[in-house]
Each structure stands twice: as C-alpha cells, then as structure tokens.
Image (cartoon, rainbow, N blue to C red):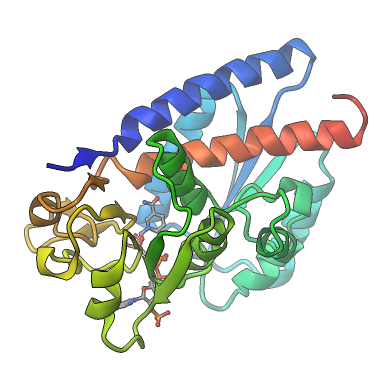
Length: 287
Ligand code: NAP
C-alpha cells in the first residue's frame, strides 16, 4: 500500500508558518496585501477567488478584489494592472484566469511588475526559473516540489514523466524537476506511445485534465504518483487524472484528489505573497 501524500495537512502546516512570518512583518509595520483581478463571472473562478480570500484572512494578508465586467477593454485592464504596479500598498497582483477571449491574457501577465508576480507567470519569472535563479515559481509546480521535499522523495537521477505542458503547470514543472537533477520527459496530446513513457517513470506527475487517464497497467511497481488533475467523473464526483484506487496498490507514494495538490496551490500563493512583500521591502532597504 502506498503512502498517501497528505496535501491538506501539509498546506495547513505551511499556512500556520506563514501566519507567524506575517505577524513578524506586522510587528515592523508591514502588512502584506494581495490584489486579485477577476474579469467576468466564471463560476469556477469565483470559487477559486473565494478560497484565496479565505487563505489571506487566515494568515493576516490584506485582500483586495477587483471585479471587472466582461466587456472591459484590453486598455482598461492594463491600466488597472499598471495602477496596482505603482500602488506601494499592494505587494502581489493576481489575474484570475480565464478572462474573456477578446482580451490578451499574455499581454496582461507581461504587464505585471516582476516583484509583484505572485503567480510566477511573467516572462521575467519564467526566464529566471529556466536559468535556475531564485524567482517566483508558479504555485501548483511549487506545491508539488514542496510535497517531494516534505516526504523526502529524492528526484536525483530519477525518471520523471510529466503529463501536460501547460504554461501554468507542465512547463514550469520541467524546470523545477531539472533543478532537482531528475531526467525529465514531458508528454502531451501529440506524444506517441504515451503508455511506454509512463511505464518507465519512477515518478509520474499528471496534469492533463482527463479523469482516470493513468491506470494500474501503465505504471511500474513503487512508482511515485502526483495527481494534479481536477475533474468530475461520470457521477459528478471530483477525481484526478489517476485511477487512484487501483494505482495506489502499486505505488510507493500517491496524492489523493481532493486533498492532494489542490490545497498546496493556495498555500504556495500565500508563500509567494509573503516572499514578494519581503523582497519589495528589501529593495527599499527597510528589511
Ligand atoms: P491545460 O492548459 O488544458 O493543459 C492540458 C495539457 O494536457 C496540455 O499540454 C495537453 O496537451 C495535455 N493533454 C490533454 N489531453 C491529453 C492526452 N489525452 N494525452 C496526453 N496529454 C494530454 O490544463 P492545465 O491548466 O495545465 O490543467 C491540467 C489539469 O490540472 C486540469 O484538470 C486542471 O483542473 C488541473 N489543475 C489543478 C491545479 C491544482 O491546484 N490542483 C492547478 C492547475 C490545474 P497539448 O499541449 O498537446 O494540448
């Protein structure tokens, strides 16, 4: 039986440590603040944004929400981002995706100033990650790496197979795993013989968004499985990309869905807000 990687518990521990750090900052007169921009009223985004606001409350981070109508222009969106860039009271800026298709999300991300890039999506953050410099790492990949560290799962020399190559999960994970000396393979919808790649893996990280895609017959004994996927199965139940019940029997470590990577993502956002706050005050030579 596999060890279940308890993301919920680990995230709770991280949040309580962040609260201590936040209290220390407040003693110095510094109150971290996160500004969240949401365009339109996507129901899933509303849930994500509410969860982020709750996490901020718990830690003591100030939370500011900018709800924009879905007929906003690109110019208006960039104007708001620029205003938040200049606002010295705002330490982190998060643009909740998706935004309406007529708006250019990449241009919007590029407009966020590096030191407030708590999602790690700006070209500066991505570039620094690629050359191995300390930077803001996208929250889900960072959460996955923290799980490996907490459970002493060594990536050195291991065959890591990442399923999915999105900018927010798969791609940054390639760099994160390379930095840990893994041999990384990344699979996507055009990959031939995907099962053969998965079968070779010492560690599988799945982020494709297909319920129960990874099955018991595809994995080798003692594999480590990190399931990033969040899907609904045919009965409306929340499931990952991995057939948990059966893969668990062969795995050495596995994350559940829910209660695995999901809670870690929000904890890492909070981590990035505290990091951004500290770096901004260090730049002003205050910390
Ligand atoms: P995305 O942008 O839709 O990317 C999906 C990736 O999976 C793409 O690279 C795609 O390949 C690949 N893919 C799709 N079908 C495939 C198949 N049959 N075989 C191999 N590769 C396939 O998704 P995302 O935003 O990265 O999210 C992925 C999943 O993770 C979703 O379920 C999402 O809800 C979840 N998620 C969870 C968290 C969390 O906090 N736990 C955070 C973010 C995302 P192509 O590039 O070739 O199209």
